[in-house]
Length: 458
Image 1 (cartoon, helix red, strand yellow):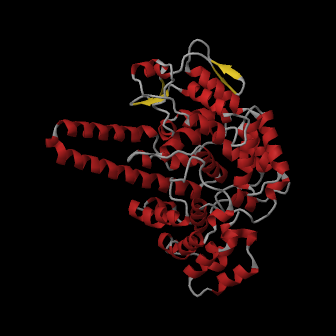
Image 2: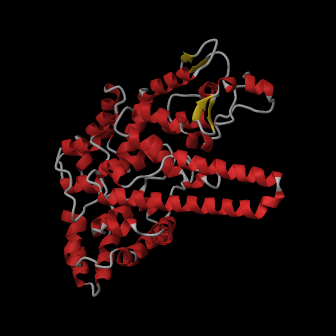
Image 3: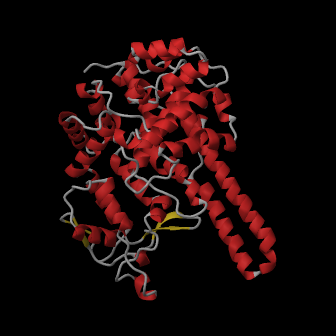
């Protein structure tokens, strides 16, 4: 293995910084990852409970409005203000996400949070929950990225945002008490299918449609209720036992422990290990991953009983993890964060940006680059392949951002002749160094560096 601190910061972190020393070793990286979550404390993001309160207040206002039309003007104005506040919160949470990546000494943590949030993709389907993805990440993803995968899996699947996104909240067993009371309610297979196909075994995993159906019956009862968050509705559960992947769960009754037992079992299935290892290596190292590296990560994961830190260590200690292929392209959000970090934008300047500025300088450009903020194309998250991101429109949007936005968020731009080394370290080509030095304006030189292939790739 050839550890390189600059590669550690760029490939496995959020980029180089003029103020923050990059990791000095693999042990240093892993020690930071298991240490206190300094950035979460410094730049807080609310949990789902805050959004839930607004959702239910709006529903109550609408109910009151239906009962008494005289409340129309007052209640509609209250609803408008609540929705406006939710949009402001989304801006606050995007700003906090940018700040965490720009100022962290633990860049791999921030990258892993985004990786696992993408692995367990959710979207908000209704007005207020459309802005609430950050709260799900803060509740379910961030606390579990350095523990057991089983704990991360359970936290993600049981979160209200996941249950709402995949329409699990109204799924009932065909022979359940709830189905008998209200004919027409049925079983929904969405969560079961995504757990098997995307979250654990993978699309080529050893499962059948019968396993999906049986798992959907096992999941019946996982729901969400106002003020309580996730709950297990026993009257919605399918009576009897279900057999999934050859193992039977439950007997004459069902309770949450049977669901949890299944999730713990599938977390350490060999196909799950292989699927997770492949995704990790593709995300951090190469779109065409080395088979030996994937095998090493999967083996370490299984040998540890599903400990994520063991998988991360195996990846970082493998020589192939440090080979410079220049294949992978930064996702748009990672490009913007690494640019802000390299520019050394003071934290008070970034955190004081208003929602309109965040929208114009970050959220709108992300959409033009092909990655609208927390609005993926489907439950399988964002593509990893470079060709998906380096399109004429996507590349034009990256260049436009690089040439115009830095001067708006960092009026005192650095000298491009020094900035090229700050941003890229030993990755600077002679051609880029010459171009940066020859630029007539600082903004042109900085833009050329940020738009360069050397900066765009990891």
